[in-house]
Image (tube, rainbow, N blue to C red):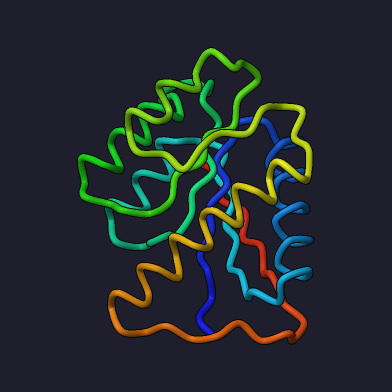
Amino acid sequence: MPEMRIAVCDDEEFYRDELSKMITVYGNETGQKLILDTWESGVALLDAVKGGDKDYDIIFLDIEMPELSGMEAGEELRRMGKNMALCFVTSFNEYALNAYQIDAIGYVVKPIQYLNLKKMMEKAEMQYWYRKKKRGGAETVSGSQAWTPIRYHRP
């Protein structure tokens, strides 16, 4: 079974850790193998993606970050032709419309509730399998125990 590559980008360590834990729980519940990277800066994330070092299937972006907002990072990823699932994380509902303008799958509001995150993961996973099937690489998900290595990236 292929691994889903996920990035969590938030300048606040608490939310990076919370999202990482919830995503790991989701992987364990579904049996989906996950590779999870965390980033504390949108600039660092974009540099890694631009440099070809990282390629993700799903990216969770905090909207309000110093230097480069999550919205700006998402727009740049789309300009680069990246078609991964984008999900925004915010404390404010007012950003919801902007998220859809750059073809995001949605947003979750802080404090993050697991059921809301689970809905976003299910949506992203459907998109992931659809893309795999289109490329001819679809596989079924087994009921085996998932594992989630977490790599932390700090500038």
